[in-house]
Image (tube, rainbow, N blue to C red; front, side, top):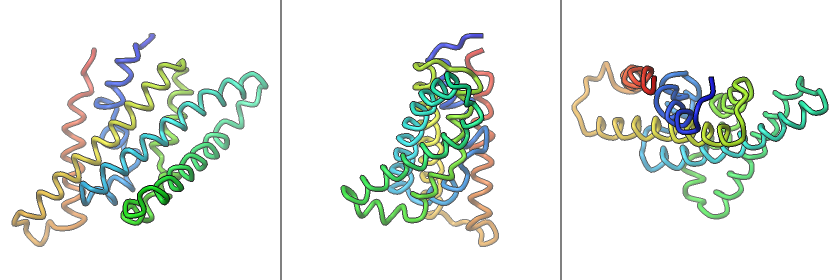
Length: 192
């Protein structure tokens, strides 16, 4: 079945959200989503890395397929992702040192973010063409950013609330993640 680019985008954004439906990229989701001013830039940086990784994975897949070196896909994707993260890190360090310091250890962790690697692997396994790969990575990144922003917004709001001591901290974060995940599971039937 051939999916349109719009269907792929909507599915990656909502129904198959990497964080809330597939449970990929939970480390930055739980770690960076404490404040909105760090969650959104982290989502944008991850989206950029996803886009670069997706485009490079598409080209690498064609190149490796031509030379019958498909067994090198995974290691090639990892090298591309690590390079893209280094690029983002250098740009942030030069143009936004405050944001660079705010993201701290979570910025290099984009390299090990399984959602980023998932984009490259899923698009290869699903045999997406160039446009489909592009929309899948943008939709996946937008979905990742949406999950971070939603979680950060709720967590900031809860800092102003009277939450019982037993439910504060990690317990509350995991309960919120579960509730958000359930809400996004409701999008599973969207689009037929």
